Image 1 (cartoon, helix red, strand yellow):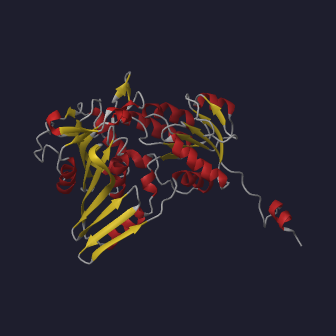
Image 2 (cartoon, helix red, strand yellow):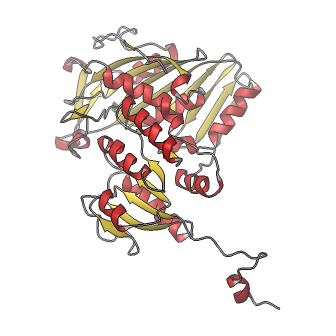
Length: 403
């Protein structure tokens, strides 16, 4: 009789040897890279992955990287010294995404690229071509798209629980202080030295609100979007927008309005509202919480979330579809391009601002912004369309390039 030890070491057809854990490299260990480090530590402890190397020009904090992972100053050095990578995760500043992603796709590894994918539609198209040529999977870091609530939303729409879907709004009101814009040279920039950055409210801190609304609407690729309008403002002394409305119409004619700010009086969990003819559904995507209200009453449920790194591992090993593929971020990239090419955000008259806190902890508050966001989403209106006294800009219609 075979012992347990013998069974564990057997390589017979009835007990195949365990496949080695996928070898992963992480580029960028600070900022959101720390989230990836924690997640990879969890996955490595479970034997699901092996973190073999990290790259960052700023060395990681002592003890942040497991001893088994080599540390390099950049991706080039890491790739020169490391062979047989299965996955490369890129969690670096926005303006570096394109060159690093292209370098990663020149290897045999799958790519996990943090959001936003890149800083221009031209770079997106270039990256799509490289991905198609390489045959590698590219996962984009819109973690909210891993929420199992999205499947439940699809089911309730199919069942007609809230009637006919008439529109979708995304509402985000967060607080970001002066220190937020001092954390890096690229924070709040539209470009640096001629290189696009596009670090605005809808493209970085609240990008998940836009991406989640688009996914629920069925708008994934560039062909799924018929029009984009932007109305961009700033309360802070920055180049990019911090308070904006983006209005989107899908190819199927569904309106999506994203009303977003990081100049609220207090941070509230962002949410996407499905406006139906017989009710509403509100998805708090950071909490995976879905509330449905109809004539029959109100229900609320919290769902699980699938990890995007694990999904990419399964894609490489078994061909499992990607949860947040590069191609499926095309609709989001049209929104980013509309923001990138729009005129500079209009400064909000200081008469309609107040500052709370002291020093680097001080943050701007647009007076009455909470109700303005709600009304914009409810009525699919811009701030100027609502007649707000500080809304001096007019919506800009983006000319969607022919595909």
